[in-house]
Length: 231
Image 1: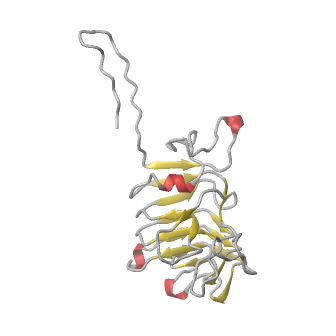
Image 2 (image 1 turned 120 degrees about the vertical axis):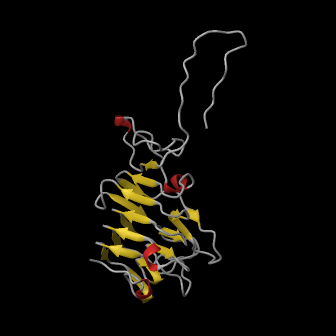
Image 3 (image 1 turned 180 degrees about the vertical axis):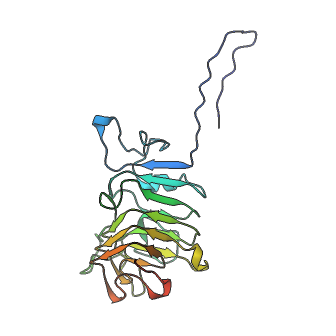
């Protein structure tokens, strides 16, 4: 969209027109502001450049379309949340919620300094921090071709429901071919809790590590059905 105000009728003055795009295929978020460098993440920014980053994944994901890439600067992403539009009920909150196909989310500086962080429940939490308002770190909802690369995914919690799974990440892929499922690359899953699959459910993990994840039923790292693996 471009806005231009035409000169008055009969005017022959020269006019300088500045055109600014309102869309990008690369988006930037920054949860670790550096005012001294003039870089402050804010959801009032357009997110088009590393110098004008958004603050939260929530806002970035509201702008992406298929094929876009979201670049995350180093920092702890522990703000913003989305309640997934599902019928699973309480506990279905996520810090990073993706419902757009073929989106890539990449930590430009790597997993040692870039964290997606869930949260314990504040309403009647159980011994593992799970409850009606607990939060997963990542939820990918039934879309193909998502790639998440270079993050530490930590402190994610499902609700305390019997079949709730994937505290760190739940990739709900009810009808997708295996090759279209979400891929995590060079990620670390740590201190996530679920009832099943404490770290990740229904994702493909390549060169990922799993440290101190837990669940109350089975498969603390990942679900067998997802054929997740770590190399």
